[in-house]
Image (cartoon, helix red, strand yellow):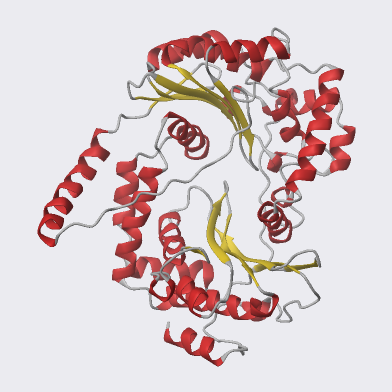
Length: 492
């Protein structure tokens, strides 16, 4: 059954390009440019409709023999409070425990008999339940999804089984250092706000959740206007709308006392959090500044800046010939084992920053190299590197939509976040509209003279002694331990 019902994960793909002679390369480039433009214009439009109860139905018809269909809900840990933090994650696991109509064994057998995969995930602002199946099984898939979303089994025995599963998962998650780091980064950057809470929630909450707690959350947040039924693959939009009306048309759009839950603004706090862990062989450090929300016009420029910063691992080839200045410095001076730049977005805010793993003696050097590159993006980003970043970003946008499941996820997330799905052709136009000056201006807006949030977990008491306010990017470089690194920083 593990092959049929599972929690969602993510994967990344790489494209290898073979070399060509210079004569053929010119022809290939011309054809590739034409092919790329044609591909964008030939991608089917995403059709969006709405039921009378406010539930939105969105789909992309590609004529494939398989399809992915799912329900995306505007609910996650940001909608929780200190007392019920983790309830959304708990409910996600109950999706596999059966419904009032289908006991767990019957649900598993039905999904497996279709050769389908039922998956779920929860983020800070969204919850998703979706099925990948043959296109001919779309009606059955929608019926199962509607049953899982509306009629979860909340029997005491199932709640206890789920409690045990979640507590075991929490122990496993504690060993995932990257997940733990980003949870603590949110905790310090958005301290005192719902975004500072983890998705899983504290173990004390998990141990005391009752059926009443789960029902209260469902009744408050599982409302039709906050849901999107998304589908991609060999489907028909009209049929999907009819199925949605039949199985989800009865979802309520009314709130008790007429009070609609509204997201409270989550303020960013420039701060630092340090933890000593002698079991760690290396230090883990993250630094981030306040970023824009989903609907900000600055997102594309920051996505390009994120692409320029790139990522690095010691297993990469290239060394000092890497295109990223931070990666080149890291390789040439052995400053870290790995780093990744990130640009996390939420409804009204975000986090733009860098996470790296390094020896405890190289923390300050790595931070100064990273902040030096941030400063350079504010003042000296060139048209050449922006042009290269555009190509890389466009490739990534196309590559991540390989298959019906990534496309369906993209539809569900975007319709919840934007109220529509932005086409690849539109993203392409927005990317082309950014030039070096635009990127410098946007980076200055978010990076220059901004107090960052810093998190460090180190295997000794060797913490950063620099204050957060002193770590603002203002063009002023603090003392570094290595003269060669300082010279590199000045050459950026």
